[in-house]
Image 1 (tube, rainbow, N blue to C red):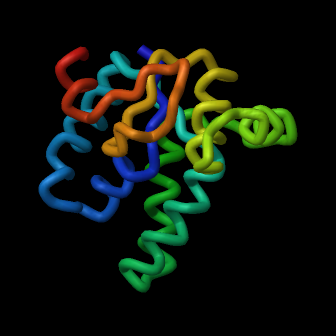
Image 2 (cartoon, rainbow, N blue to C red):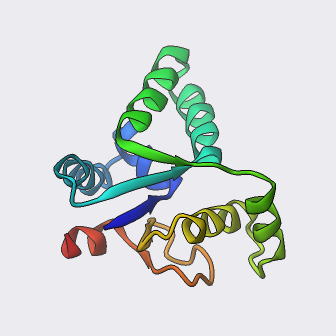
Length: 135
């Protein structure tokens, strides 16, 4: 199953955010088994670095967060074509539109997010719990 991970799910595990970290950890374990092929957008990586560094006040923690994600996930390139698809969408949240455009481009089966109102998307959007129940 090919899954694009939204920023909030990754931050849950990287910042050990209760009460969400347990489900995020479960998903990471499923990635390790190969049942999930995990994707992340390049723009999500910049967001993660910024947020982890700001939250922890540590460049090293932010660097390690990105290194961890890179070990587990395929990075979706955000290029001109992706940006144009996102801009042409009806989505008012540009970050969400980028994620959906990347998900479509890579043929993922779903996007996992705690923000279920993410966007009107042709790709199913699942909560971490819903995804855990499916794998």
